[in-house]
Length: 420
Image (cartoon, rainbow, N blue to C red; front, side, top):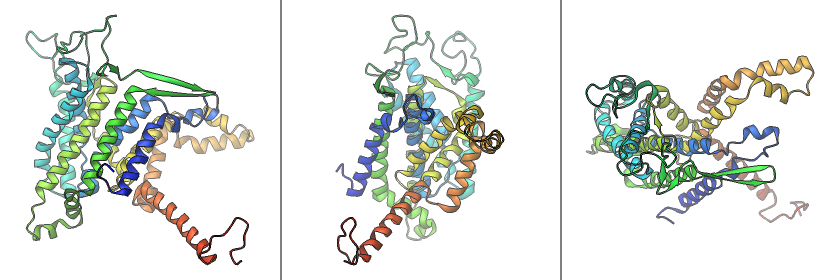
C-alpha cells in the first residue's frame, strides 16, 4: 500500500485516522464538565500539534538517522515564515505558492549553513549551527529591520525586510499583484487555499460536546501526513540506510571508500526544508513572522520533542511535539483557583498544603514538570514515548504467552480451569 511495507502502511493509516478524528479525540469532556479545560480540540492548538510535528519529523531525519545534533534548526523555521509572508505581501494570499517559496528558501539557506557546519562533527557541529541560528536571529531582529532611506521609506520596506521586533505583518498598502489588496469591507485579506480561508471553521454540537472543524487544521494535517509519508520512504530507502551507517560508525564507512559528506549534507538540507515548511504553515495560519521563531529556545524545543517522543523512530517526534504543545497550552493554564476547586473536598489545612505542593509544577511552572518528565525519559526510557509503548505492549504479550503456556496451548473458555 502506497509502496510501503505492511507495518509501515498500518502505522500510516493509524496516523491518518488520528489526525482526521482529532476534533473528537481531543475533546473527550463535555463543555459543562469541570474537566473541559483539558480539552485540546480547538483549531489553534490542533494546528500547532501538526505544524510542530512537521518540524520534529524533519529534525528527526537529521538527528535520528545520522546522529548529528543541530541546535540551530529554528533558523529555517524563521526563514520559512518570512518567505511565506513576503509571498503574501507581494503576490497574493494563496498558501500553496507561499509554502513552495518557504521550502525553497529554507533549502537554499540549509545548503549554505550545512556546507560550513558539516565540516565539523559532534559538539563542534552543534555549536556551529547554534551560531548560525543566533546570527539569523540578530539579522532578523535588528540588522535587516532598519528603516530604509529613499522613496520607499513609508512603503514596503519601512521596517526593513523583517519588521524587526514587531515582526513582519500584512498591510493594506501591500501590492499583492495576483490577489486583492483588501476585502470588500476594507479589511486585510486572509490566507486561503483556492478560496478556502484558513480561519474558517464549522462547529458541530452533540449534547454538551462542541466539536470544531477548521479548514486551517485539516489543510495543515494533510501537509503533515504527506511529510510523514515522505519520511517513511526516506527511512526505508537505501539513502536512509546510508544515514544509519553514518550514525553507527562513520570512520568505518570512510575506510570502505565512501564519502559520507554528500549524504549528511542532503539529510541536513531535507531537514531544513521540513523546518521551512513548518514555518510557512505557521505564517499561513497566523499571518505574522517574527524573529522569536529563530531564537535558540525554539531550536532546543524541537530537540526536546524528538528525544521525548523517540529519536530515530517514525511516529516518536510527532508524539513528542504533541505532548510538549499540550503541556504548554493546557497545563500552563491551570491556576491556584482551579486547584482549590479540585481539592475542595479536603479539610482546609490539608487542601492548602496539597495546593501549595502542586502549584509550582503547573501554570507558569509547567517547564518544571516538563523538565522532570524529560529527565525521567532520558534515564528510564531512552527510546522515548515509543519505547514506553513498546514495553507496555511487550508486557501484555508476555502475560498472554504465560496464560497460553499454562493452558497447554489450548483455548480456555471464560471461567474454565486451564488444567481441564
